[in-house]
Image 1 (tube, protein in one colour):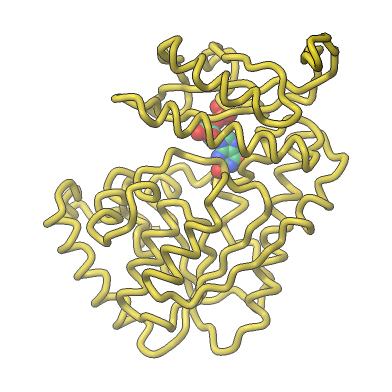
Image 2: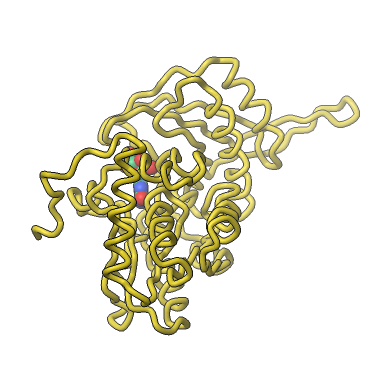
Length: 327
Ligand code: XMP
């Protein structure tokens, strides 16, 4: 286990200079470990896998093969950003897998949260393994494991942790950021030139919007959630101090709305979007920050324009008794 204990001599990476020294060391170490061989990486676009990818691109260039699985539960613009940054700007070898239908078909009618998580996790590994099997000459598997993952080892990342891969795909591991804490990963990401939107991303659960589209996921409710989430991220993101995590959930309930057609009121059923913003240190407990009422109203006015939505709620529940996510 000693190879999984952060060396005491390792200084905390807090400045661009320290980050650059870490990057230089890692590039040399990666070149020595990998040589001319090929490395496979599941690139979600989260900060950990993105920093891992950027380091490997600097070290081995095209011999890093990134696989980005779009399971349909990502936030608005995320798959596009991964392609833009890694394929277009950094010149990475990137395989983009559109697995949206496959995931949503498997999830159709499933309302139990843990079953949903298991389906997403298993499907992710299956899709990744299928892609890996098509490739030739892969000898290493890179993972964006960070130090808290090792310390906690009960991976909230379990679904993205490709440890569940079939035997013939269990390559030698490359884990360049495994001794870094989250804040250090961000400093390194910044020094590597990754965009702020990637480096300072708020935490996002592996099962993504899947656990925020409460109950059985339907495509229309999921799309409404994705739009509302983008609005909330944009508006709350403008505050001088942003909460630790802010997002939307969409419960599987409808309530009565009214719209006026030619001056005549018509009642109809629509969904309610829930705005959630929390502050926490370790996600074990969480408090609810004040959001200026004008900002809440601005979000409401934009969210009710999304087809199917007729109500906007603000979740002021703390953890405990509520969890941060709705599922
Ligand atoms: P809860 O809802 O348990 O969330 O208060 C605590 C933190 O964990 C995140 N979370 C997850 N992350 N896979 C993940 O990778 C998951 O299944 C998952 N469930 C919750 C949540 O976003 C919050 O930051």
